[in-house]
Image (cartoon, rainbow, N blue to C red; front, top):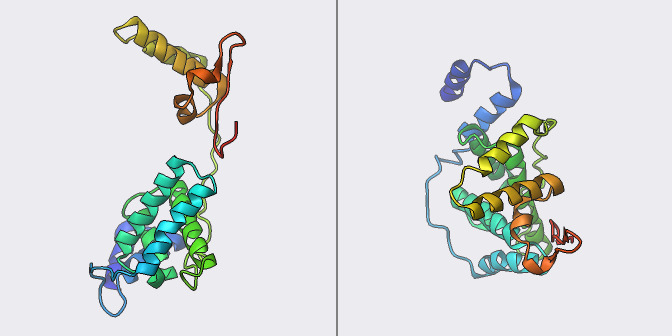
Amino acid sequence: INNIIENCKHSGVITDVDTFADIITLELGKYEVKEREAALIPYDERLNKGYKMFFVAKSVEGLSQNSLVYYRAVIDFFLQFIQKRIDKVTTDDIRYYMAVKKREKGTSQVTLDNERRVLNTFYSWLVNEDYVPKNPVAAIPCVKKEKTIKQPFSAIELELIRDACQTYRTDVERKRNLAIVESLLSTGCRASELCSIKINDIDFAKGECKILGKGSKE
């Protein structure tokens, strides 16, 4: 309690209910009967199978390789942080994890909600497949995000970007970089989509190419 009061005094935002709730969650989340201690997680063959089969199932459903890598990174980091078996994780564990990520790690609201969504997907699948009895993420609401209008590049900024392409030593590098920039500007495709284009995808006669986008949409 003293730590909570001191944190509030130093922050100067004791009237901020959300911040106060985060501080309480951070402090009390460290305790069950005693302060959390890192410990070896008891191995469970069935739960380990569930963990592995989740990624197999998502791969079969058509989740991209990049998404699978992201899902695995989020889930692995969370489980290493919590130091509990998958079936022993509680809603309070999720709250504590998110509070630490937000208050101590400075994680953005968008990233925090993405991680919440991944964990929710993971546990929803485990529940549906009878690996765990309950989804601890179900009670966690979506993280509110600021909605900002993204400003386009100005004409001057576009010329500065094009000029930067001319600073490379070889003519091949200059042409390549300018082609990358012009393609991104004129199509609005993602950088990863541009990188995945194959020569066979391009129709040089028509000046067109096919792109396999997010969600395996051409």
